[in-house]
Image (cartoon, rainbow, N blue to C red; front, side):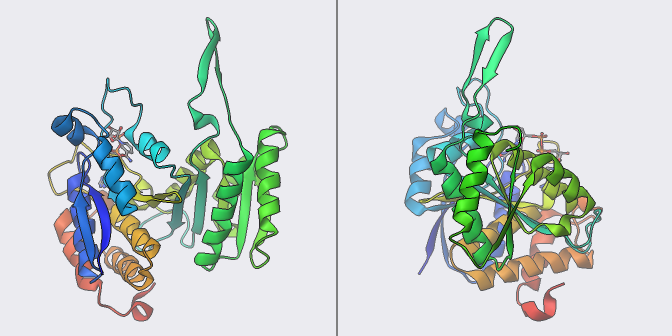
Length: 341
Ligand code: NAI
């Protein structure tokens, strides 16, 4: 059996890092029927628009996509193709694990947190208007429905990943109605998951505590803006966006992508580090039910980075994108229990 997966090469370094991820996934032996579709600058060149309907319907039909970074196309009516994809496919949960890696210098050696961000509303609902000249208003939308499904997603994720605690991050002390609803909903959903501990933390305190001692957190769930900020903070705790995988998940589709951009300064030169997208592809494998293959990919990437021989330029090495890719493929068959670090 083959899993259908839409592959969006993306712009800039996108084709290089998606090719690396595709080769590594194929080398695990999991059979993927890759279907190439376009979005971003490449789609503007081919079809005159950054998000062709056929790309969206292909993702809906396949249910899964692996996506390279997309250049922001100007003058097309879309502020961001990424946001548009999330909206159109109702990818309501952004899922970002941040785990320390041997070989990547960062402040802590033992970070292992998962940030889950509500992706569809909050201050990112796109509802802004000018009240009177010089005064604008942005509406921050919080609904019971969206709060319920993201809370449930957080607890289900905690279960799936063998985690012990979910922390709801909020500002309900000030935003009594909106974050009050988000927090009350998370508390209520927590009652359905007696095997997972639950607590909550005010967002400013959470930022401070993450910096002082990130090991006190396990799974964090929060609304859109807080999640945008704290997920980057957590990436920073483990070495930055270049090594952080990400997934946007809905009921009917899931899109796996790196969080870095198109890196136009190094595009086409085999200088890109594909780690973030390769780890996103590992999340995809787990999502497809191929946990062993996912584990093998993650372990192989960790070994190559810890070993230090095949590091890309951004990590202080001299290896090309394809050198790194080959090194990861070589490590895939190492038994995970021996390999893990
Ligand atoms: P960027 O992430 O593309 O680049 C920032 C710096 O990080 C550059 O020096 C770049 O060389 C480096 N870098 C990024 N990815 C790397 C990788 N895989 N390996 C090695 N070095 C890497 O951010 P920037 O310059 O702000 O944005 C460039 C374009 O990317 C813009 O058009 C922006 O809209 C788009 N973008 C797309 C995203 C997406 O599709 N998910 C996310 C962020 C930006």
